[in-house]
Length: 471
Image (cartoon, rainbow, N blue to C red):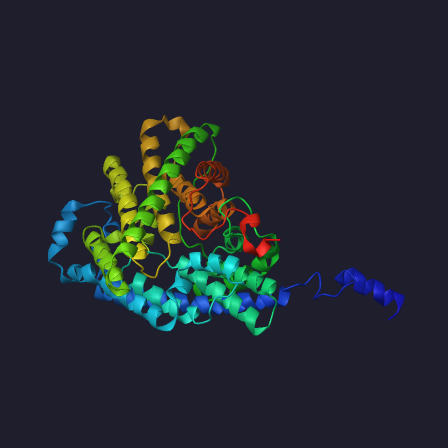
């Protein structure tokens, strides 16, 4: 090779070849993103089928939902619909779906390997990035059965584990080292969130921020997560569009005095997260202590969720209607005509969603805690925003919807210990990037004050605590 050719090679590839430096895991990350994107498209299709044919056609959920009728809390409407047999069917559907999902996991994979994001984190630290390939179809279908039948949980936790299984399986197929398998597992985890949440940048950050409860991150996962997330999101968007997951009216941050009410919101979020985590852990412990078969536990949890949903149908399923209502709060909707009722309604939805999620997932049901945390943060933020809108002078320019969005970010940052991801994910899913500053403020405060609290007990404190980096 001539000296000129050598110089060109060194300029392009750093002198050691593409596979050794510049492009390490580049091609593999593209493959992980492509496979995960296709899998998530299929997963999203199953979600749509369950929503259309089970929740809506069979259970008439869209007709029973108060928010769909322009009322955030309507005891009178509850009594009016009491004779609808579809409503009585929704009483037992969550239990049926939870049992079917549990039995599917029990038959075809280990329950410990299929607990969602917590299982993915554990596999990264303790199992050399090994997530069984069987998790991909089994966890997907089990979660659709659980949440699609009305269980109060989310799809984002399961899709995290599904993406991690895609990355781990590709790493084994390519016979990569343990380090390479962990990196691809994290890239798949990021790609799953990126696609289903339609939030590529936040999804990429999730892939290197989720593993620790402190502000530590996995540096070697950064570039593979970016690559896999970009590919996965692009494939998903080709089928389901390039628009944000939710819509909200335009509102921003134009008054420095608003830092004070946002500080109060951060304090409220801090203690609300402690309630959310404590109640979930206590409920899970109670179900584990029961001396009955596992399918009976999930049936009890599903039945309890159905009873709650009988009176408040909006808490069934993923409850994205609550996020929609929160992000449009204060903009002339029917249920905003009487603010005190709206405040009580949003607070009630926060507490009831917390309880229903603990029964669904804490009993052993297949579903995620990520989306319910978003719902709880949004409803609580909307209630606080409505209160400040009534108490503070008009010069503050309080937007209740802005408090809902920032509340979602703060709740995620504090409960799941992902402050950077939280700041960006609410901006991407709403299409509103004008509230980054208050989101930073609230996420920073709530994350700092809740040090030592985490929804995922498999998270370790920092890199020094992980077997991956020991020695």
